[in-house]
Image (cartoon, rainbow over all chains, first blue to last red):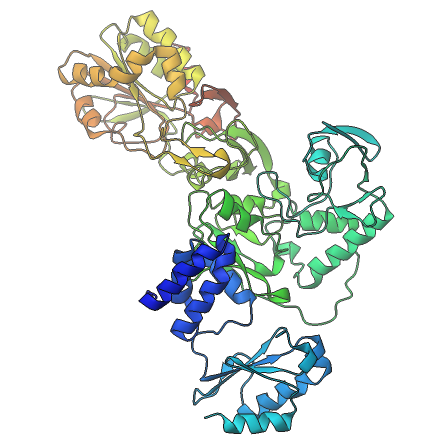
Length: 157
Length: 476
């Protein structure tokens, strides 16, 4: 089904399109808008973004699939993005990832059956000073250990 | 102008020219995958590194502009070592399936590995693999063989401006792909197969048809429109196996359209005329010879003959026809034209002409504009009103059904002569049928819409007894 932005998002899009000098640059924040409005990006959302920004859908797809940080359509209520770049890796991110994998019974880019959690290995979250880091939806959880993580997960409803 | 030295050869180049272009223009080859003269610079493949005196590190020649007094070395020990490393990376996930790869023999990855590569692999892990995939009606993708030079992506962004392909994912997962439901389906899609430096994008039409090293390559001119793209035909065992564009910056740059690319099939179609035939009034058909046909034709041509000649005839045929019409005092002459199509323009100036005839200009040069514009109408009227005793049609238009009014009118003449490449409703009625050669079976020339006379070469033997138009006409 073709998608459209609601009036409020369109307003945001209009404002953004004035701010960016090139179509390619505008593409990134408009993908964010789509992510917010549709709670994740699917092919239809990419086509919508392509039409609005004025680039071919294949270009949108190549940008969208390049970045790990965009939310895919069909992600769970909580998107757990485990940073796996070097500083986090040195401080135990692999252990964190394996722990989550075992606890939730899913691999990277998979969602639990109840639709609550999606696990994802991502590239640098830019918080190396507080590594290892997991981003859950819009929030950073820093200096993590598996124990701390269990506590956090228990609080998530 | 800038003066520099490449491999100790003094070279003069325009300011802003890349070292790569300056070298290639002066006959010095620098290996490259991603560089293409008609596309934007990408600088991603890294194989074109060269040493420049007083520069701290080797530089990619495609992204480095020439400078006054620059001293460039394109081959030395350091450069060879870098190229070897670059190739090692390209070959990590490459299946090295050359024995079943259509690109083998004309693959730059193969050639550069031969020149600079290692004789063994140090990679013992599992290779990253992708399935083959149809990316368009003409093109299939072997992503495992891809070097991610992005020539195809740039071609589709800059020349056709359709942008069907992108590089998806990141790092070692990088892969060329289409957006779901949007295949590479544009009039120039076949060109991405030509510019792909490896066996990643393969023509489905040519797939497994012939090993390139067994083919003969001959130059010709595409007859499917008035642009007159220069083409290289690959011929194997007497059959044309593929067409590819030949670079001609004044005509077709580096490209040709898909319709022209596949047009060799018309030459090899099943309904080619292969014999001289006569048809009696009762309708019985007899095989005859060129000589006998010429004799019959000589006796039936006169001042009240009407002639229809097509703009698919070459200049040699048209000139010979002019001599014949002058000799017999034939005034009723018309031009058979394939109807116009849509003109299409692309990035970089490549054009598909609206005129679907290769030699309208040539016809005009020989018979004049009045005959070209009004002759057909006059001939049809003369035939319909019974003013023409004999109608002599020289067709040869490819991929075309003759107009019904002509077929209907042709039934009214006493004697119908049809000289054509393919059988048609008209040859079914003709009292004399002369099989003629297509452009692929003779030497000749077309004058394209710019007025450039372009010679084409005989690619294959004629179908059966078919003869070039001018060989037949010269005997009348």
